[in-house]
Amino acid sequence: MELYSLGVQELRRMLDKGEVTAKEIITSVYSRIDAVEEKIKAYVTLPRNEAFLMADKADRDLSAGTKKLMTGIPVAVKDNMCTKGVPTTCSSKILRNFIPPYESTVTSKLIEAGYVLSGKTNLDEFAMGSSTENSGFHTTRNPWDTERIPGGSSGGSAAAVAADECSAALGSDTGGSIRQPASLCGVVGMKPTYGRVSRYGLVAFASSLDQIGPITKNVTDCAMLLNVISGRDFRDSTSAPVLVPDFTAAIGKDVKGMKIGVPKEYFIEGMDPEVDSAVREAIRKFESLGAVPVDVSLPHTGYAVATYYVLATSEASSNLARYDGVKYGFRAEGKDLIDTYMRTRAEGFGPEVKRRIMLGTYALSSGYYDAYYKKAQQVRTLIKDDFEKVFREVDVIVTPTSPTAAFRMGEKTEDPLQMYLADIFTISVNLAGVPGISVPCGFTTGNLPIGLQLIGKHFDEETLLTASFAYEQSTEWHKRKPAL
Ligand code: GLN
Image (tube, rainbow, N blue to C red):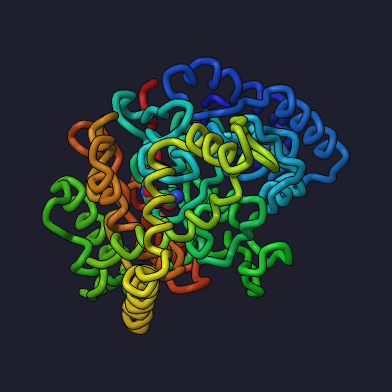
C-alpha cells in the first residue's frame, strides 16, 4: 500500500506508532499529485513549500510528544475557504489574486490540530454549480472516467480524495455540493447540521444554507475530521452553542431496530434504473443488519429545487455585491466609479454567477419580493416541517444522493435547468438545515460510482455515522479505487 492511498485513521495509527513520518506522507502525496494531477486537475493551488514546512513542523511535534488529532495528515481544502497567505480564489477571476490576510475558523482548527495543507481545490465559481464546469479556471475530471465530470461544486475536493491526491478534504455544501460530488466520485461526504461548523472565512454564497463538511475515503475518517472542525465560534453568530460529542464514538454501534425512512418522493421517474436498484439493494442490506425500513412521505419535495433557486440566488445577489473592484480582488479601471464597478463585475464574474445575481436581484426587487422571496421562505418552512414530521417516526431517512451517476463533460452546460436538477435529492436537506451524508453503494455497469444518501435529525450526525459505518462495513464498495 502506498502512503498516498491511505486515509486519516490509518495514517494516524502509523504516525503514532512511529512507522512513518509526516514528511514521508506528504512526499508520497506529492508524488501522486505529480503523477495524476495533469489528468484530474483537482487543484487550483498547490502550495508545495508550505505543505513540506507544515509536515516538518508535524514531525517536530511528533517527536516532542505534542501530537494532536491531525498531526501530519494531508488535507485538501476547497478554494472558497480562506487560508492565510495562500491564494483563495473561489475559482473566480474576480478573486484570482486574492491572498487572505486571515485564516478561516475551520482551517485554524485544522492548523491547531496539526494538519498539513496539501492544496486548494477547484470548484464551480463561488460554489455555483454541480460539475466544476463553471470554474473560472478549468474543469476537474472524474477519476473513474476522465471524460466525465466529478460533480460539484466541491468537485476538486471529491476528485482529490478519490484519486488519492490527499488523505481527506473539506468541501462546502449549499444545495448538495459535498454529497453530490462525493457520490459521483465514490467517496464519503457529509454536510453537517446548519450551525454545527463555523462559516467564518468561508466565502459566502447563500449564508442561510452554506455549511462546511468533510469529504473522506471512509466513514471513520469523516467522524475524525468532523471532531476537528465542529463547534460554536463567536465569529459566526449562526454557529450553534451545542455540545460537540466525540463523533468517533458513534462508529461501530449497532443498527438493530433503527428505523429507516424511505420517502416515496425520492424514487422518481427519470432517475437512472441502476441508481434505483443500487439504493433499494442498500435498503435490503440495512434490513439484513436489523434495521427496519419504513415507508414515509415528504410531500413538499417537488418544490425544493424552485424554492432553493429563489432563496440561494437572492442571498447570492446580496453576498456578491461586495466584489466591486475597490477593496480587494480584480479591478477593471473605468472612466468613473460606477463604470469601474460595472467593468469589474462584467469581466470578473463568469456567466453562471451573473445569471444568479440577476435572478436573485429580480426575486428581491420591490413588487416581486412577496411573490418570490417571501413565498419561497414560506415553502421552505413547509419543507422543514415535512422532515420534522417524518423524524417523529424514524431515526434516519435513506435516499439516492444523485438521480444519475457522473455525466459527460458538456452534457448539461447548455441547459442550466438540467444542471439544477442534478441536486434534486440533496437540496431539501439544506433548506431544512438537517445533516446528510453520502456513502458509496454500488457501481453502474459502466463502472461509475453510485451514492446512498442518509439524512438525519438536527444535530444528530452521530446516528448518520452509526448507520453509514454499519453499512460500509457490510459492503466492499469503499475499497474500490479508480484505475489511473
Ligand atoms: N449545485 C447547487 C447550485 O448550483 C448546489 C451548489 C452548492 O451546494 N454549493 O447551487
